[in-house]
Length: 260
Image 1 (spheres, rainbow, N blue to C red):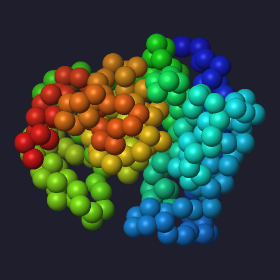
Image 2: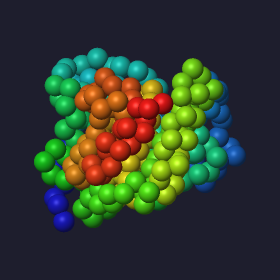
Image 3: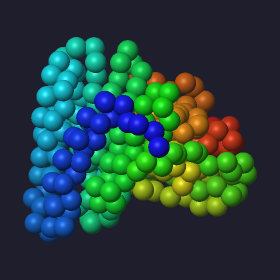
């Protein structure tokens, strides 16, 4: 069992506090007040309240940090950056599907150093710190060892009807024909955590934001996985598209996506 670094203890305190509030609302889905924020992208009272709990808790320990959040945007501070997604998988949440993640990550000099993903519905607490591995509920995480894509389960996210939708249909067709199955979790953080845990063998998606993937990227790396853009270029915190895998099948998936 790895002893959690102090920063992870602080992040855990924040997400568990927010998670209690979120779990209560999850049991009363029909009473949530929902306001539309675009097709398939909803903001609930739970989303906004969860974010405020996270910010208030974290600011006690990191009052001068710069905060980047999905709902509030950027709160300017010093060079220490903390990224927050209060509910990754909001649509899952309001439909009573228990695949959601409360996400916090710390970034210094554009490098992700620490991150947590907490699913309060399943009580799964994922964390990673640079050089200390990836963990979930005190269990060390490792990516899968599968080498043949035909045996692999691959995750993705499916965009709404926008300009890249036709491309995605072609990509899904190319991957599905060559793997054991395709999965859409509805929350990028959960996809990434499941790759780190060896439940998924790979995952790709496009047009994401840093709060969607920050903690998950570190989880995958610390679990022995590989992270890049789908075209093979290096991934950094400004990248919008991502491909992660157990390393063994990375180039194969990349090739399938490149021929589209």
